[in-house]
Length: 165
Length: 165
DNA sequence: CATTACGTTCAAATCATATTGAACGTATCG
DNA sequence: CGATACGTTCAATATGATTTGAACGTAATG
Image 1 (cartoon, chains in turn cyan, brown, green, yellow):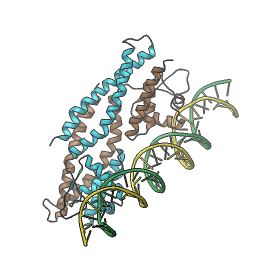
Image 2 (cartoon, chains in turn brown, red, purple, blue):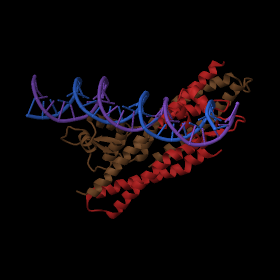
Image 3 (cartoon, helix red, strand yellow):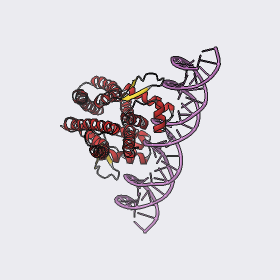
Image 4 (cartoon, chains in turn cyan, red, orange, purple):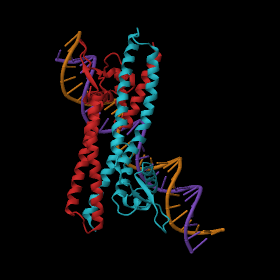
């Protein structure tokens, strides 16, 4: 067996685990994707538990999450009962979906808060007499400006560039 | 006391904590920044431990991290022994520095691995006879393409747009 | 229809990480 | 010069997230 090749694959698996770990979606997800991505044959949950030494539950859950992001897809293997998975190659689409999922919700929450804050700021109309209120109003304003720019960048570049092709 | 105002501030603090928590740099950092950002007066470590109910250690460490990112700066208050901190308003610069710090290192690591992989792939020159090697070579190639695009986006838009003014 | 082979779920155990706080070094004060 | 007021560090602990695995439902098999 080309042990050199296996070694490389293992480094990718380890690395994938570190990456997903560090962005807060758990190590196993990255390992599972790397394993499937670098496997010429579609993989079963059993393969995953064996090759990565993870539990059945972990395999099932991580594969489902990856499926949600379109990172892996289920494929038919005739005459087989098990589910087989293979990796999507289009990283752009994968990352985009994952980011949308991970960041989207957060942005929404932040927006709600900011809306409330602005309602509050508006109530204490333009140059308020209370200096603390006035200070707060200014800070909220700055926040809004930043938020809008972030939104603009998000909309214009990341998605479009990562998506195309 | 304008309890309505305090309430709003607290929501921002909570929200800030959630955000930094979710990007994996700890809840306290976000709370501390939000607190300082929404305080008209410069704040001491003592203020932080009191207002946020965190330990002296946590206050010290989070402030130092925030300083590193340029999110807060120390200011002189004459006749005072304590260190006073106030927030920078330029979110663009803050985020940029934080991202550079957080993502930069990771990209480096990934690069090392990819370089190794390509060295390996190059060894098994162009269309290899071993189908497994050939498969591996193709996958590494795809990875490289994605990585370069990510680099391009990173260099061209995010930093520039978030940074300016 | 009983048995086996799966995939899924979720409470419990495990593990990683953030947080605490006592101990320490240094600067200021009286 | 003590004594006090700080900020910092880091081992111990608490917290919270991940992972396990037994129990379960369902579909295929003989």
